[in-house]
Image 1: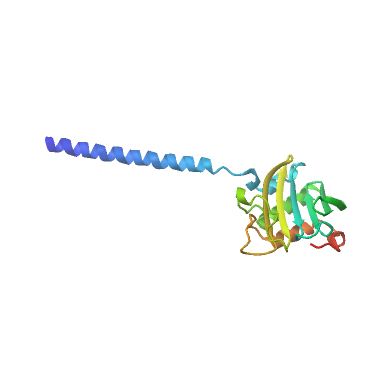
Image 2: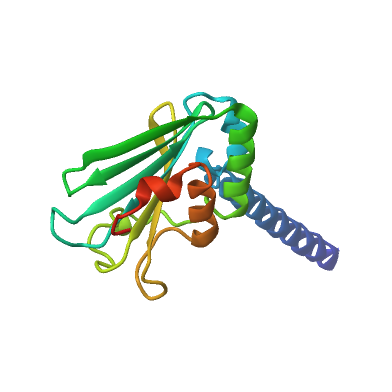
Length: 195
């Protein structure tokens, strides 16, 4: 009778330990999935095509040089327009601007194309928040996505290639081509720039 009781106690203790471990594992799984809530910018970007406040932007910051030689080009696209601004100097004096009409279907396709180019692929490292100073003899590319004037995402990379810090991990060449394709006379607007 004593042996039968020990078996029951051993069985009961083993069962309690197994249930305890199961509870710990399930709790860890649920808390891990709650901590991995998606960043709104990581939602399908094409879903924002109907939102008139949604904008994607590319800023090309030219090489580090004299104030009088420095240029930047910014392309901003929404569901109603595509705008290119050309700036001179580090204070950002507007040299040229052109705006072209856009519509929701075109913006939807553009956003889907950016998704496939890895526009949302990047790292959010506070130590790399600013691109200035990196790769000083080449261009820096800053890509952002905003909704209601709130920046949802901002990544950057440089023309220096591997070995230089960056936060953008998508396909730079495809992203650049997609943005320049939104501006019908991109070559004319940017001609003569050191970019």
